[in-house]
Length: 305
Image 1: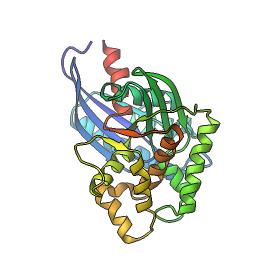
Image 2: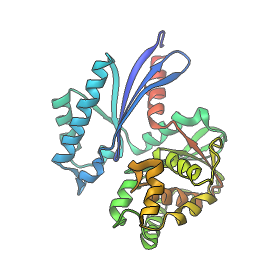
Image 3: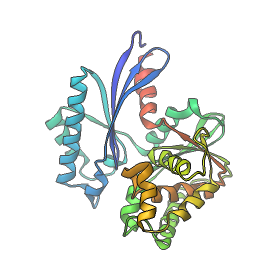
Image 4: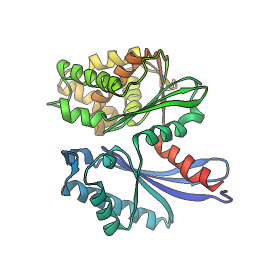
């Protein structure tokens, strides 16, 4: 049980970004005190499911930088975990050993199904609807949780994300019509391969930076009220159509809301729209919490009780 405030650092090593969050935890809740993100793009240093030496160097350097911050703040309680960025690579044992030898940090690998469960646990208290589908779209994977009566029923992990799809299908900054269709077909193919049930679900919960960036874009374009946390799924196609041109005007629209996602926002938008079509989703609730808060709740707070 947590008797007094506990300051905890959590480092989430993703395919696109590596993020450090520092939380102040007490008996009743937690508060985010600090958040720092590095767009490491580890997925760009993978070939044939092997993370190359340059990628390993970037990973180690980023971990060392984050460890310096934790040491400077005198934070003794910290956890480092990795998702699709490291769990599917062939040389993960070697990578984990190099990280441990050079930084003293042990990285916990989170499976796709566990990532989905942690994402759900991170947002369940803030979900407005009791029944629906949760989507956690990352750079290298997409987690899906079908939930009923506020409880997780089915979990799936699609081995595709906004950055992996960009790298596979897009030749310029933004996908052409044909490239967008290829991405959409890939999403439907993965849903079929994993035998995701073709249910009618009208409510979606969106987790991750892409859905938050989409909401910012909708607000910027005057299509969404800032105070409204629900996104009508019909707006996704409208925005996608508006972002189909590889020109300066289109680039500026994205740069204005989230410069770091200029190349991944549209592929991510297509993934979310395709999954909305698959389930017949009408409304999307954009959540600011996700896998890090789920990890915090299940592995730190609940473990201390």
